[in-house]
Image (tube, rainbow, N blue to C red; front, side, top):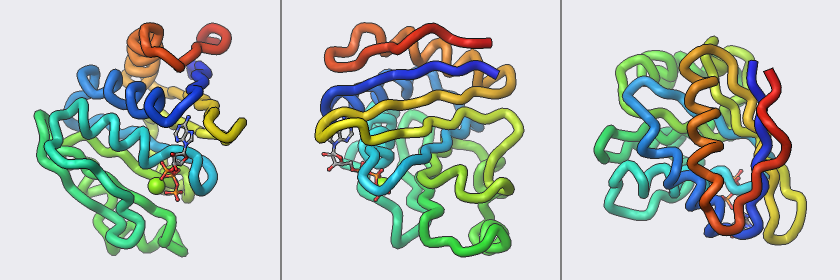
Amino acid sequence: MTRYALRTSAEEATVAAGRALAPLLQSGDVILLSGDLGAGKTCLARGIAEGLGVGHPVTSPTFNILLVHPGRVFMNHFDLYRLDSPLQLEDIDYWGTLEAGGVSVVEWGDRFAESIPEDRLIVAMTITGDEERLFDLDACGGRSERLASAWIEACSSIAGATLEGGGQP
Ligand SMILES: Nc1ncnc2c1ncn2[C@@H]1O[C@H](COP(=O)(O)OP(=O)(O)OP(=O)(O)O)[C@@H](O)[C@H]1O
Ligand SMILES: [Mg+2]
C-alpha cells in the first residue's frame, strides 16, 4: 500500500490535478473519490474528463448515477451517493461496467465495501479551508500504486498544488 497527500489551494488546482492524471490513465483503471459534499470530487472528475479529451464540461452524475463521456478513452463517471444498499450495485451493473473498459471515476466510491476493487486508488478529499482541499491517496495493488506515484510526480508542476510528505510504503 502506498500513501501520498496532496493539497490544493483553489478549485482550478484541483481541476489541473485531474487534467494531469488523465494522460496516465488506461482503459480498465478505476479511481474512487471520497469525501464530504462539496469536497471537490466532481471538480477532480471534470479535470480528468478534460484531460481525456471529453469535449464538454462534466457535471455531477448524482441523479443519473452513471454518465458515460466519450474521449481518448471513454470515461464512466459514477456517483454512488443515492444508492442505499450494496445490492443496488448489481442493479446498475457496476462491476460489469467497470470491467467492460474505459476509465471509471466513482464519486462516493468507498460508500460500500463491495464497491472497492482489489487493486484500487482511493482519493479521500477533505475540506481544510474555504478554497483549500487535502487529498489523501490510498493506493493498493501494482497498477494503482504505479498510477499514484506517477500522478503525484505530474502534480509537482501545478500552481496551487503542494505535495505533503513522501510516499509511505
Ligand atoms: N481547492 C478546491 N478544490 C475543489 N473545489 C473547491 C476548492 N476550493 C473551493 N472549491 C469549491 O468546492 C466545491 C466543490 O464542489 P464539487 O461539486 O466538486 O464537490 P463534490 O465533492 O463533487 O460534492 P458532492 O458530494 O455534492 O458531489 C465547488 O463549489 C468549488 O468551487
Ligand atoms: Mg460531485
